[in-house]
Image 1 (tube, rainbow, N blue to C red):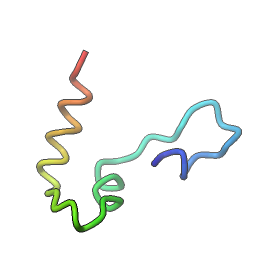
Image 2 (cartoon, helix red, strand yellow; image 1 turned 135 degrees about the vertical axis):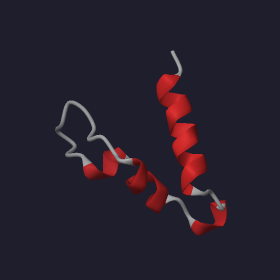
Image 3 (spheres, helix red, strand yellow; image 1 turned 90 degrees about the vertical axis):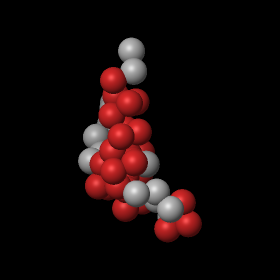
Length: 47
């Protein structure tokens, strides 16, 4: 997703907030914001 918001000549992608990620999910996923936040926390804490 951040590839869409970052210039193609950039050496790294722009960080995204959990709100931006949440808004990008299609409604059919039925994913709540607290569940997404928990998942992102688990991903960021994983060594």
